[in-house]
Image (cartoon, rainbow over all chains, first blue to last red; front, side, top):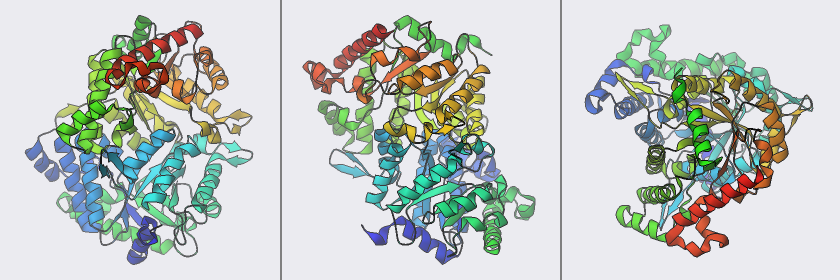
Length: 311
Length: 311
């Protein structure tokens, strides 16, 4: 174990340094990208997948440049890049690398999960290394990724194995932020909802994967379900909780207190649209599309104040 | 609705034509690729991610060339390409395109699924179109994809919407083939296992998405769980079932009869390792690594005979 290098330690150190338990979701819809940024990208690469990829990369870069000193981590949602095919995924990789250079922890929101050997391939490609002949490569190289647990332990274990070896970490879906998450996740099994059962399993996994105070096996619990967050906090005391659904999806600062432990740690709250498309909101409209990065910076400051106020 | 172009019709027509309800899983581990193929790829691209991608693409091409006339469909597992980063994903795309040129139906085994707007991005990128300025693009362009339903209806619906519009189809995870699939999927909810509940939901979705006899919303049920397959067949009468787990994972022809309807249709059985790495098996060792494509062809013929015998 190379304790000093564990990414969960870096995440917690970054949170303490910034006093901001937040993560900016880099989920760039093309419709969020101001026209002047699109225009420039299309001038160089045409109205093509390459042009779209360049536009979202330039958009991300400006937001990262304007916010990186305030925040501990970012969470690029790979779907928003994958939708633009190979060029989009190149922009994803560029974004991951750039954010790491800036000292940010990168949580790849990939929600992968499959049978054992297939999960092992995803884990190697995103968190670990692959061997080609005599060479070793780190294809995507995120610090953490999100994992879907529907297929059970032998789907999650290959990710855990790579995390152990590579000092990385996971956030496993437990109770997701979307309106229909209850359709399966809330169904009662022996009197307990499925998400509680998954939470208990995450707690077990986490115990064998401890950093110092917290495990490097985390969980995803939506801000839109504060009561469930309160319960899951108790069930998974050593688990870092990634909390999506704040802001645009409806979660508010006051809903968040119970996701945290008494040490003020244990949770990190994501906002995507609310930050990266801030310039489109009434509240920040004064910045105009040309200063979208400054709008995002102010939105980050407001989010931090809201969450500090709630804790 | 452009009935004639629905991919579920093409899938069924291909199955009737080949009299082979099977799909070859193009899941190329680098260790399956014979040395001479690796050597040639590395000579051109080095022992790099590009070299690995070229090796698996050449490997796939030979197997497709030697089997395409016997089979209705292929199922590339995207993880096996994604593990080699951007070059790997380029090999995935090349494989999708090549198989479609050969008249095969392509099932992208991507197991994606996320909150609504994110699922919409995955659906557009894999089954539909994305708009960039005045241009429309089809980044990955598979015929079907697999979807993970843990997040509920608003995760699945954006995929269904794109399928309706684009004549594509889905296979939704219900009961997966892996040993620990029961950990969550078998837990009883009001006396019924979770997979049955998911199966009922898939049956509902399928009813609104009918081709002729079968829906274009399918399900994944592992060959390793024949009893569950029998039950799910009844619950989802109009649903095509994609059956992984045959061969290397332990499923046998005689286990498969109950996955099919009385019309001899309704299921398609996947084998990956058992076909693409056939030349490594005792049974096909006579072909040697230099004739691995011929070994795969014989393995396909044997699989077809095994399944026909069981029906």
